[in-house]
Image (cartoon, rainbow, N blue to C red; front, side):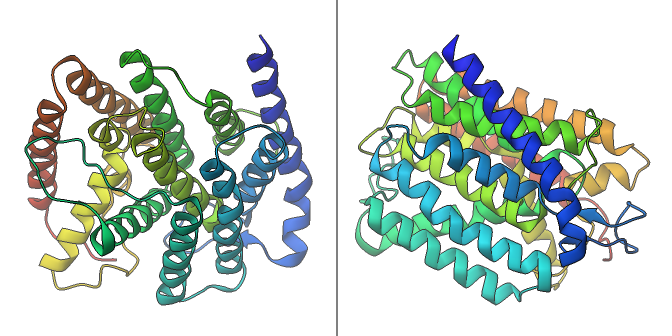
Amino acid sequence: MLLIFASLGVGLITVCLIAIFGPISRPIGLVDKPCVRKNHSRPVPLVGGLALYISVVLTLTFLPAPFSLSWLLASSAIIVLIGCLDDLVGLTVGTRLFCQFLTTCIMASVSDIWITDLGIDFISIDIDGWFSVALTVLVVVGLTNAFNLSDGIDGLACGQFITCLACLYLAQLVSESQILYEYWLLAFASASVAFFLVNVKVTPIEKVFLGDAGSLFIGFSASWFLIIYSQPPLSSLEPVAALWCVTIPAWDTLVVVLKRLREGRSIFEAGRDHLHHLFVDRGVKSNRALTVILLLSMALNSMGIAVTYCFHPEAGIALYVILFAIFAYARLLEEPRQS
């Protein structure tokens, strides 16, 4: 019962912060202005990410947590700051990636958590030293940007984050292991649900967007939750199950990179070749596209987690590779699309 009231409190704080920050955003220019690539007709405040971050910090700062989770909030401040600057004045791709790389290294070094275990018996590679550093940076920066790139229709990035947290919780239930620090997962999920409801216009509060501050924050948080829970010392989640918690964001980003490399285009340029664009450009309303993609994510994630725990992690990784190959093949068959 206490957790229920606490989650409602986090959600309420988030909604209140959104209501406060919304009017303030216009005088300082923290808004997303309409253009030919966007569907909204008037400027929309980019304060959802700030509200999410502050509400989580206010809730969790004084609660007990392992060193790694405490540092997640501290290092996320850099990510949110960089995102806010990008929302306000625009930053180059190189600047954003460098800051993400630096923040990832700070977080991993201080918490001393790196990817050292793949959880697959037939792969006997020793993951240590620079290989562990490179793999950790690649995963964190890759997933951070995968969530950022999925923020193309209302509710999608945040919905994928909620799905990731739900599947992380589900995996620990299926494994019958103790669910560690569940109030952290609940706080992040509650704040995200509150923003989601505002973003998809379920509430009477003025609609706001996550902004780069928000999409980068949830991507950074998702990647570190999966690493912290799947790697020593916690290791309460199979590393293969961690892969299954973020199927669609990871697959979609990988396929877009492959498509652009095949077409000789920059992987960093703006375009309409993500999965949500595929739906919308074919006449599917954005709310229906959102529903389909989130249901697909939940179904895929749940199936993969079930296979991983009910059979074997190696069965889980085999299924993951097969389904990704099918997904990638279907997407790569599409005709090249212009920006």
